[in-house]
Structures are given as structure tokens and as C-alpha cells.
Image (cartoon, rainbow, N blue to C red; front, side, top):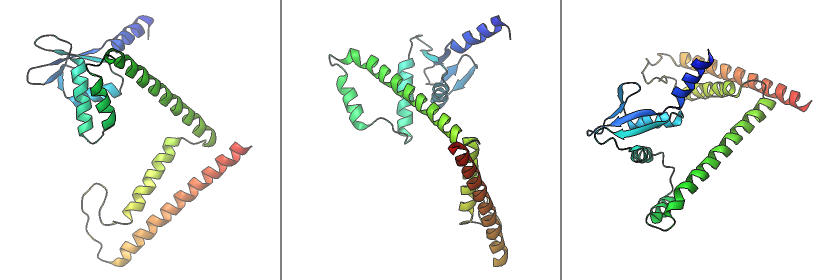
Length: 205
């Protein structure tokens, strides 16, 4: 890719996505030429996509109010992160002489928290990479697979996709299936133990 193309791509990534909000509360993404929802905007925030929201009629910048709506929606989904005490304190600052200082203080506090979180994530990656020569996400997938199989032993007649399967006509068939599952679990557990022992031995050298 040429330098000009790279520069153009970087400019496109930095340029905020323009979203218009109409009187019927519908949100229109001018970049994708499609209607979107608050959930879509929430996903864009998590992905680091910068956007601005304008009132389609007045052209006023209403990004702040839309972001506030997203927080209200997320809080209402049972994902509450804002403690009641914090909300009371925040409301108390409105009209207070310290109101002008609160926004910058909160921005700095959140930026510091995000930086510490990233440092912790990198430290964990380096630590896990030192003690475990195989990928952490691979171990996670193996653990999830084992847990799913272990849980299936308690309900062997109902698969995970929710569809019902015919009940075996003989207890012997069910017992054999359980034994096979247990054997598979034992083999995977032993495999993980071997990997862990090998990695620990290697780290101790």
C-alpha cells in the first residue's frame, strides 16, 4: 500500500462517523447509508469508532445526550456499573460551584483507569506466556468444551441447541454413552495436566 493510500485510510479512520437523528427518534448512519440503533452506537464505542450525532432538523450536535441515552439503556439491561451513591454525588454537583471542574476530573480518572487496565492486561499476557507455552485462549476453549461435556452428563437427553432428541430405549445405551464421555474427559484432563507439568518444569530451569 502506498503512503498516500495509507494516509487516506488513516484519515478515514480518524474522521468521525456522522449520525443523524430524526424526529421519530430513528438514527441514520450517513457512512453506511442505513438506519441503526443505540445498541449499534454502543458497539461502535467499544470498537473505538468515533462518531457525532446531529439533530436532522436543527443540525445541533446532540452527541452528549445520545451517549447519555446509551448509558441509560445499558444500565436498564442489568449491566449496572454506576453505584447509587456515585449518581447522587454527580447530581449534587449540578449547579454547584465545582460543576465546571467535574468533567475534566472524570475524564482524567477514566483515562487513568483505562491505562492501568491496559497495563494489567499486557502484564497478564506476558506472565501467562512465560509459564504456558501454549496459547491461553486455546486452554480456555478446551476448558469450555470440557465443561459443556461435563454438564451434558447431567442431561444426556437434551442437546445444547435446545432441540429435543429421542430418549434411548435401553438404560444400557445411556450408560455406555456416559462412560464414553467420562473417558474423553479423563483423557483431556490428563493432556492438560501433562502440558502444565511440562511448562512448569521448563519455567523452573
